[in-house]
Amino acid sequence: MYYFTLVLFVIACLVLIVSVLMQSGKSAGMSGAIGGGAEQLFGSQKGRSLDKTFDKLTKISAVVFILAAIALVYLSKGV
Image (cartoon, rainbow, N blue to C red):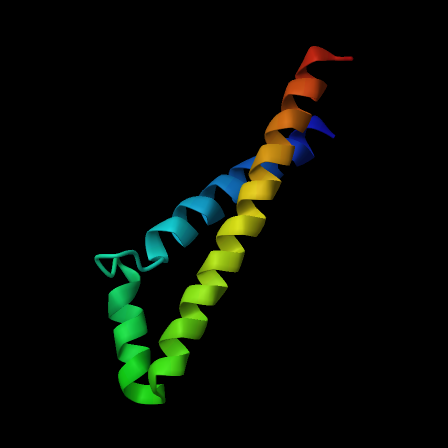
């Protein structure tokens, strides 16, 4: 169970890092290249939906990250 939680924790870490970096911030971040290209091809809605997807992915991976961290502490103590 410990190793499963550890793998889940690492995956959540990587997904969280990528999803935060791909979000467009006030300065249009790294997703400006993807969102800008999508906006030219598919209209402005595609870029917005991409940002919403990254926003949801960030929230979900943050919750999984926190829960996995708490579970790892619990499992490492052997309680």
